[in-house]
Length: 510
Image 1 (spheres, helix red, strand yellow):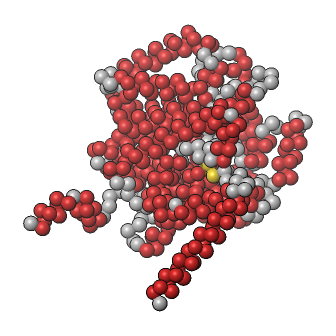
Image 2 (cartoon, rainbow, N blue to C red; image 1 turned 60 degrees about the horizontal axis):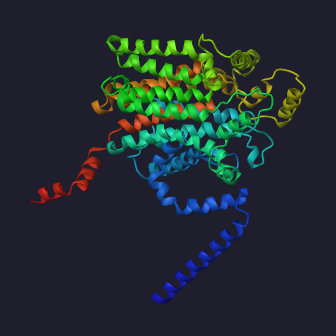
Image 3 (cartoon, rainbow, N blue to C red; image 1 turned 135 degrees about the horizontal axis):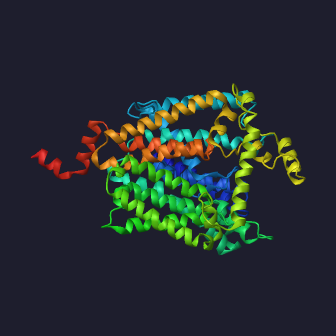
């Protein structure tokens, strides 16, 4: 009976292997089709499932700022979305099996996010559905719902378990430095068409901006690449978490200050004014939180600003065009065409905001959601080709408002505003509590997380923001703050300490 059972099991496994091999052989005949990539991705995910279960959280952190995308699936979702969905499923399953998994922590952050999700779901239901064109829906816009909901899920995935102290810097390095992967898009484009298949896994956005600049006809494009700005910002964020602003300004270790200044210069190559504005807001917030305005270091900061200002005044109009565009918010002598292009971008936004302000009363009680009528999109393209109506009509239809408050109130009404403000308030207060009550070796890290959260709130409200894309950053900062400062139960810590210290077991036995 044992032999027959073993034989039957062997035959079953052999049959499954043959079937899987036949399926793989069939799909790799045309490996770049969506259906083939979905099958191969599903098989790879099945084989890697144990690894994903163990490391899903660090994979989520490592991909949130990365350029990796799931191009083999409809919608080209960022890679972090897959790990957020899988991680949320694992966390819910673990919570069903054990009470040690905490989903809602003190401070109200979790409840605020649950309230926001309720508003989003009810709005989508009332407005006729989500609208996922990639899976056959008649309307567009569902991808924004997916990004928003998975952004909320990422908070619960991160905050469900504490991050061990020995892995704190690994998580922080993954969180900040993963933004360097955006440069891979430029590298693939420069390598040539033989490597374009890699865009199934790497975002094409940076390469698209590079191609648009290189293929310009009338010289009416400025090279703009968010990859350079994000990579530079990631390095600066990690250095701030590692040394703090006081450590960066330490003249006995000038290489940290030099690294930050080089990153600031490289970040301006991206051509975005928001990069320098954001760095100034973040740096100013940390400067005040560390109390450096009460020390002699303020003289060093003023001296650095004075030297940079003199250099910019003398050579601003000789800098590369993309760098000049990053400086257009400053009163400097710049190329006239660059300043005109930047002003045109601002005027385009102001014109759109004037139109959108008229829509606020109609969507105040029940928001319009994210679903987009395809007929309205086609009409917008027709109007754009013949210069009918505002040039920003496509942005208004797609929900790309370039304005944080409008991106909340128009899609989700006053109820979405209340839930989101509740979340921002609770998140800021919780991160501030961690900053004031954490262990001494965590003060610098918690200060940076709190400063980043405050700076992003200011940026979201007063400069530029989008709810569906910006919520994930807020959720990650709140979730990381919770996980980094969470303590394990005493019994669990004792068990782990015993397991990691064999000499302790030996001494207790003796």
